[in-house]
Image (cartoon, rainbow, N blue to C red; front, side, top):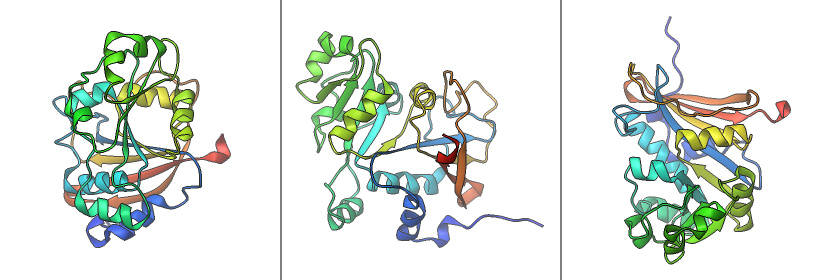
Length: 249
């Protein structure tokens, strides 16, 4: 007998939003969104674009729709060739109807402050981005240049401190944090016990190469999560949601 979870195709956007926002309390909440192959690779040929399919992209857009801020490490911004944080018209309409700004803030994490201030990420941003960096990164020549196109926020001396990062976003009223990578940054969030939720798409493929895990680094202990739901996408993709088990904290 084959037992499969509910199909994403049978659910409306409102149905999916109800599922993905269930049990989210008031106040700061950090959600991390990743995709992986069956054998644990976070990419194929160095990119995530070929993994997950249309249903993963649908969920990806819906999670951005409800976010106050989209948080991404600078390496992922470069590797995945991010553009400005601009949502689709239907997402903007939904946000307006729910009393939100048209687009979430784009927050980029970089220890060194080494980013191109002339990138479209900054020059075409509908909302002024935030660069979360170290004291040394903010004082570097590239960090000073970024201050012309973004709010540069120091969150540590030589590297970005996870607690300081969360506090900086909370101070700006950016409670719903949607993080899109990358693996080193997720490793730091796990080590700092900062992850409240993981939305993980499992692509039914075997990469069989040297692709990275979704998180790299070390953590002092396991962070136990509880399953919230599993959905079936086209082609056998599984879309899962995991929430930090607060009883285990």
